[in-house]
Length: 128
Image (tube, rainbow, N blue to C red):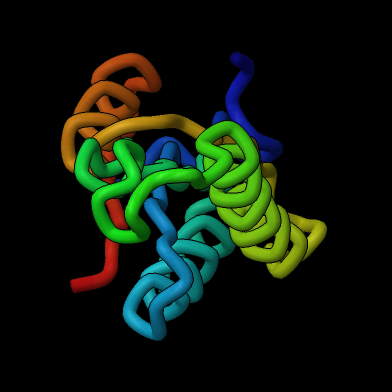
């Protein structure tokens, strides 16, 4: 992945490759806003990600409803909601900021750490 526009022009920039994990919360929205501001100031780029949580074994066995739920439909609906959350977050990023998005599955903390290592990010922004 090539650096965002202007990254090479500002070698003094501290944060040029920022990872932002969003979850739809006000704290996550604030983390995204702060990351956008840093990326603009440093001519950096953003990677915005969200993680679809693993389904609860208890829920998927039907324990909450006495059985009879369409597990695949439930999984598809949850993934669609997280995709929409991610799309809205990316759409809110100004056009002058280079942005990449990732929809992942599993425990958010684990997925954030994996992306941090894989993407060579120099800052992670998350809500509380």
